[in-house]
Image 1 (cartoon, rainbow, N blue to C red):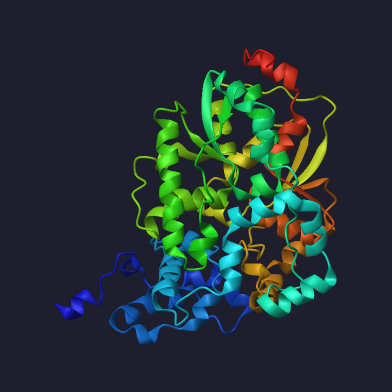
Image 2 (cartoon, rainbow, N blue to C red):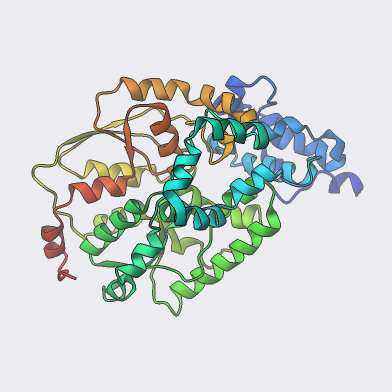
Length: 422
C-alpha cells in the first residue's frame, strides 16, 4: 500500500510514456547544461520525489514555465505544473527572496509608481541606479524594466465617466485589464474600448479585480496568490451574474491562462463554473465575426506590413489562430508569421541576474530574425513578449487589438453594427 501511495500524485505524471519529445521542444535545455530537462525535472523526477523529497534538484529553478513541453506532449502531461509544484513543495528556499517578493507585488508597485511616474522612469533608466539594483537585489542591470504611466487606465476610465457609457451598450463584457494595461500600457485599454464599442459591446470594469497572480505563483507565494485568486473569482462570478456581463475578456494570454488553468491546477481552486466565461479579446471578436453577429469596416488608406509572434501561452491555450485570423481579415495588412519559439522573457524571469544570460540565449535567434525583417510592426498578444522584443530590436511591437483600432473605420463600423455615437 505504501508503495502504491508513493506512485500516485494529484497531477497526471503517470501518463508519461517516456517518449522524450518534450526535451526536444524545451528552450532552456538548449542553452543551459545545468537544467535536467522537462522529462527528468517533471514526470521522471516526480516518481522519485514522491518516495523521498531528497531527490529534488535545485536546478529546477531554471525552468521558465513556458509550457512548450506541455504543448509537445502527446499524452497531455502537465509537465510545467509538475515542475512548478515540485519547486514550491521541495525547494530548500522556503521563503521567496526579497527581490522576487517585490517583483511579484505588481499592484503595489504600480499604484505607487504611477503617482510619480516621470521620477520613477528616470530613476529606473539611470545606469548608476541599475548597477546598485543589480548589486543589492540581483535585478540584472542589462535587463529592460517596464516604464510606468502617469495616468492609470482605471483613472482614465473614471475620469471619462466610462462606467455609465459602457453599460448603455446592448452587449456587456467585463474587462480584466490586468497590471500591464493599468500601469504600463493604458493605450491598449483605450484601444479595447474603441474596438469593442464600435461593434456594440460595452466594457465594464470589476470593482475588486486584482493581479492574476502569475508572478506570485512563480515565486512560490501561494498564500498571497490564493487570496488574490479568490477575490478575482468572486468578482468574476458577480460580473457574469448580477452584473449582467456575458463574458470576462482579457488582453493578456498569460493572465487568462493563469485564471483558467493555474487557479485550479496549482492553487487548487474550483473554476469550473466560470472557466468558459473567461476568454481572450481576439478570440471573442473572431467568434462573433465568424457567426455574423458583428461586422468590420476598414480604412481604405491603411497599409501595414506586420510580423506576428505567437507567444508561448497563446500556443498553450491553442488560440493563436483567433488573433492571426483577425489580422488577416484586415485588407491593408500584409501578415508574416515568425517562427514558433520562446522569446526568453517569461514575466520577471529575465530580470533576475542569474537568469539573464539564459534569457538572452533563448531569444537571440528570434531577435536576429525580427531585426532583419522589413515590416512596420511586430505583433504579439503577450505583454512580456512585446517588452522583450522591443528591448532587443529596433521594431515597434503592438497588440493585435491596437492594429485593429488603427485599421478600423470607426464611423462606418458603428453604422454597420447599428451603434449610435456615444
